[in-house]
Amino acid sequence: MRTERDTWDIVSSVGVTALGVAAARAMETTQPDALVRDEYAALFVAAAGHEGIARFIDDPAHHDSLLMAGTIGLRSKFYDDHFLSAAADGVRQAVILASGLDARAYRLAWPAGTVVFELDQPKVLEFKRRVLTDNDASPAAERREVAIDLRDDWPAALLDAGFDPTAPTAWSAEGLLPYLPGAAQDSLFERIERLSAPGSRVALDALSNYEDLDEMIGFQKEHLKNSPMGDIDLRDLFYTDDRSEPENWFGAHGWSATAATMPDLAARYDRTLPEVPEPYHALYLSSRYVAIAKPLTTPSA
Image 1 (tube, one colour):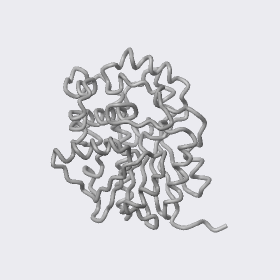
Image 2 (cartoon, one colour):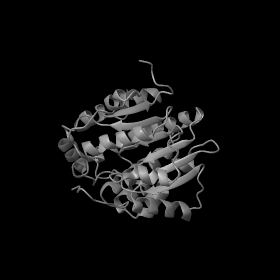
Image 3 (cartoon, one colour):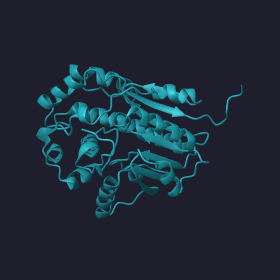
Image 4 (tube, one colour):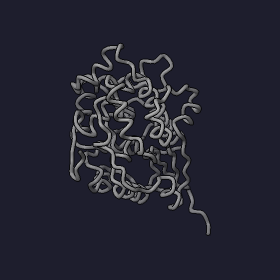
């Protein structure tokens, strides 16, 4: 169970979910029509030494979780497009909150002069740095690590790392919000708002329905035990307390927001979404992928 000051590495607690997502990205990468190509994902899984998740990649017979690989492919493409679109419009500063095993600083085609800040637990960033260094990986942008818990004063640490609050920023909070208590989520939004210059953008995903979480976990343990997330009980990791809807919170602060469901993303990227088992319906249909933008000018009264 989560505690107020819990910490983790890449094979414990919340860290394992990042490893499972990396395994799903590795699986997507092997597809001939892959939406994303992340050649680093399999390296992270191999280096972590998590037997169950490594088996998923090493033995094709265990590639039975098409649902997870398919949805992570769609999710990853959504965030890739977010950063690339911002870069095409001249944004040269990116912040990846709870970066986990995200390797976008290495695999995306960043314009010259882009700085990518990655924030996460110290042990997670240390693991990622070691694996990338051992494999002679070179970032495609200037990458700056900010090792900090997002429940602490991360804005101060981000500023100390050279973040420029006067320049527009592309932010991401991928797969993050359910792991924060409601008050911590709203605090995160307040801090992003305070640090964001006009023209900044945020991409995030959110859930609205946790009602069938028990049924989903039971189904997962019985039918998806060979998937990357088969041994992970999200009831021990998610916070399901009351919180603001991101679209409403940012809208009340003058930002514009558009949301897409997983079926919307499948249509956008011309993909057929794998059949969703009944216990997953509520969770997946309530998942929203939200693009939020701060206007360049303040609307007149």
